[in-house]
Length: 576
Image (spheres, rainbow, N blue to C red):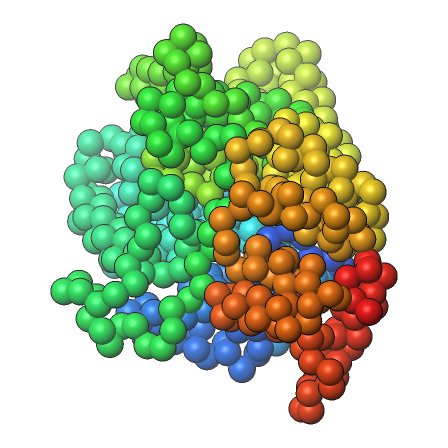
């Protein structure tokens, strides 16, 4: 083939990867907000207003703290606002996600081509990435766009760093640093780009390349330092064993950086059985070794993936030693192969590097999730590219190559099989509870979805199962009490609340139970609940029900929701 024809061929192969990534997910894009979308899109007024795009893109927000949800991920917020400007509903936003995944597939092809040196191998690896079912979660749950954007800028930054190491130039260096910064402004996992770049550069151009790239690597470390400074005061989650973040002025954070109220922080109320990992370093090490081993299995064999997991908590050395030994053996093998200049060694090191932020070294909200596999899929795609190149005829018999293509077809079939699970919350959590029957959170999420559908018996049953799976979680009992009250079985509720510590939710529920027999007490309890959680609209509307007359000045939406609540509470026997 003539040299001039090769760029056209490469563009065609990248387009095939793009088309595969899009086709695998396009048929099942629903018009429903799923899972975290309810909180971060449905209840996020800032991201719904096109007028806020300027504020989201204002470079001043990199210094000042913008008191909104997801302020630590401004790249994601900006794209969500852009979707709002375009008038995109949930299906349109998911289409944006699918297009991002398709772009990532095409971009990855060029990285694999650079590192593997084989167009067929690069295409095979890019197709493995495009069709892998672990990507489904990042596409169908809109706010998980953060991982799609993070991957795009991570791979772009890695490519720019490789080009810089081959021939240093200001444009390549600036592109690498800018992509790294945009990657971490999308999601936290790309923080490891300097490590990945160092490994890839040494593999590609050896010690001379590392020496040439030294200024760039130092620049990336500077970007990482600034990002850590930026990240600390932004909104997040309060977790056992984690820093609460920066919420008050200090020498590093002058008072001028904290304009107005702080952004709301999520509170991890429903601590699943893995909460022990936050209290013991040994339990965390053993448990996360098991999680890491499961990730290594799910990369080539992604069966039984789910939207929720309940990983086994490994408390003793005997429980933790086998997975830890296997992970260390895989890491040692990767290092040995890498030292010999073999592509599988680099691929495995990239997988382990990309998994580092997901191994609960810094406390995580979820200790296992499919979306944490999205970045490691880049290293796995390189491994797949090398493997396919190794079995291509005439170097090897055609049977292994045919088997590889069948495996690729199975990945696509598994992705298509999972598609209907992402239709709505009910289908999502039904599948999650079926695949993770020991997960109390999966049961509780399914119960919540059933309650929104008006399926009271199924909701109460699943809340009971969730509470039974984790008797030590008082919040599950509270949620069961909510369901019982909502469904007209309020007689059981006082016993469930007896030992529950008072908070906004328990105050609200107690006020709800008093609506019928003691409106004055109900008004007092509901007022206390609203004072404890001022942003809760359901608290505000329920408090209005204690008044004899509907207050003037209510919006049409408030009036409609007030009438709906009144009908529900009357049906449940909570209101005259």
